[in-house]
Amino acid sequence: MSDTATLSSKFQISIPKQVRDVQGWQAGQEFVFIPKGKGVLVMPVPQRESLRGLAKGADTSDYRDRKDRY
Image (cartoon, rainbow, N blue to C red):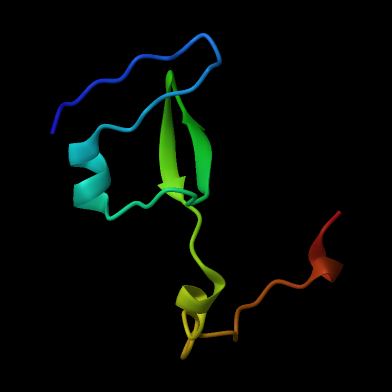
């Protein structure tokens, strides 16, 4: 997938339809922009419900506390 888009005078970019369809992105969805070298990684912000249970079974025995920071 190698679609392109042009930055408008209002600094907006339309995400190509093929990309939206493959990713399942919808209008009104929120995204985060993460700088990566000379580019940027665009990722959807997850819904709170989709994060439920994400850390279930995580090992907390080596958890850092704020007390060990400067």
